[in-house]
Image (spheres, one colour):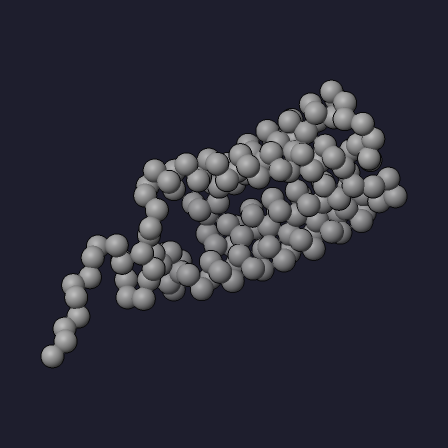
Length: 148
């Protein structure tokens, strides 16, 4: 007769996947992900302001300042949002995503109005809000505590 092997401490609940990364890897990823996203965002913003022209010092400065601001705001939202209720948590990430996309869109072309950038930012923010609210709502118990 076959018997089940004893489970290791890696699986925390039935059906859950084991955490294959160490705490050190998670700590590095908490800083590396916003840094890489900030650099990509800064490069994208700088490329949008060039309009296909040559790279200048002011263009590089704009890209790095944009990357630093994106990184700082991302880290702020990442630190603040988990302490909030699921509605505010989703609103923070939705607002961050909507503002980021709207700003890039406003830089992308000379024919775009501020109204088009605002509408696109609101649409993206609403989609991110709905998606994250659904995720947070389905991963909490009736009292609002996160299920781990």
